[in-house]
Amino acid sequence: MAEAQPSATGTAARRAELRERLLAAGRAAIEAGGLHSLKARDLAAAVGCAVGAIYTVFADLDDMILGIGAGTLAQLERALEPQQAPQQAREEPVEELSRLARGYLDFARAHERLWRALFEHRLGGRAVPAWFLEDQNRLFTLIEAPLARLLPHEPAAARARLARTLFSAVHGVVSLGLEEKLAPTPAETLDAELDRLVRAVSAGLGAQSPGSCAGASSS
Amino acid sequence: MAEAQPSATGTAARRAELRERLLAAGRAAIEAGGLHSLKARDLAAAVGCAVGAIYTVFADLDDMILGIGAGTLAQLERALEPQQAPQQAREEPVEELSRLARGYLDFARAHERLWRALFEHRLGGRAVPAWFLEDQNRLFTLIEAPLARLLPHEPAAARARLARTLFSAVHGVVSLGLEEKLAPTPAETLDAELDRLVRAVSAGLGAQSPGSCAGASSS
DNA sequence: AAACGACTTGAACGCCGTTCAGTCCGTGCT
DNA sequence: AGCACGGACTGAACGGCGTTCAAGTCGTTT
Image 1: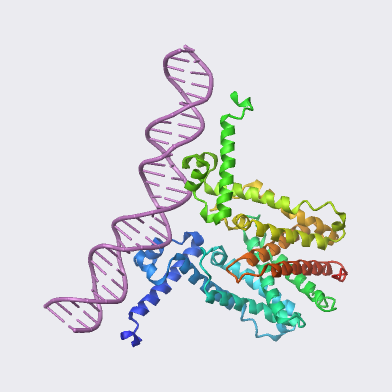
Image 2: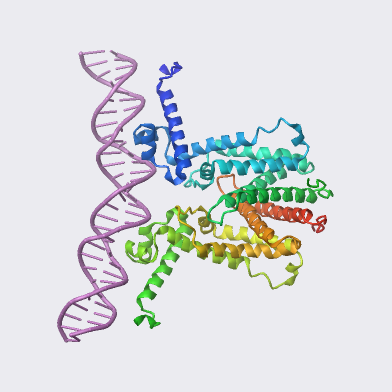
């Protein structure tokens, strides 16, 4: 049982390091040319190993793409989380929702190909790993917090559904807005449209719930 | 000049018929197994021609996918258009927007793989054909009509942008709602969430524009 | 020193989209 | 009628892909 050795040159450690280097090379490949330019031979050449070595740390390339996606999700979460120091944001839930949407748009712009790979990737029949779903749910939780303040009388389950719906709507606007297949939207226009949508939904949701009449006037 | 002959067995007519049969076979392949199961050899076998014949009517498979997409867009347009007989829908723009969103969801459900192929397909650097963009714009026009009644004081250009944004939002909810990568939403829940979103946005937009206070109360 | 087993390798396999030299056949001229 | 021509069609072949696995390598144990 030599595995107790925490030495840096253990067999398991070498595999872990190879895994990380492959993930980095894969991220670089996707950033450079999109998901479809992820090639096993290129990866092997980039990290200086044999093609077969890839399959000692990943079941196949799909598995590797999932691993890259996990990293992207973590990065996205970090980009959306931190802004909790100034407590003024806590006052207006709408402002926080708007900030989250804007953060999502900025992230997608900054890492478009990596971000797109999260959704382009179709897994062929296999079930999604549980940890991947959990990573997604953490994102929805970020939305649920301001939503809870916006709709305090809403049941928690309904709010969870609503958080997903809201995310999906924002994702749609960002996804098609950055798409080149539709005539592409100018940057500031997209910013404004996304913000308008978020504020409209927020106002509309507030009006739906109790008798309140969308009290938060703009500016 | 034998081309003036409208005979059914002209050379050009044969090519046109081959094109149609290939498109039909391609649609069938996508419906059976998704975009990635569109194989040149399978197509050739299905229509009983040589693989090379495919490239006499399409530049490559991407070109063919674009052709299939055109058919899907036309089908989608037909599915969303017709409901103009009863004039009661003309009264409430919100109801028409809701109907359009629901129609989009139903279409996506009924032809999920064909519909997904519209967006999954990345064209490698080539520009989108103009007719494809026009087909898309016709869809947005369907949204602009009720929007014009909902926001009569909005400039036309802003309404056009808004129509795109609205479509994108609905598309996002449908796309991620039907996705299996997120824990899939039950059918009725998705129906309800989409409807809730559309009504919330409509109410919120109405509240943004003039001083009106989302007058259309539900039920 | 010898034998073993775990790890790594890269040539080979099957499948893919795409091409193009060769073949075939409808057509128009003599 | 015979003939030569040119475009339409064929399918074997090409380069490239993800994935596999017999063979080789090397550290460890006996």
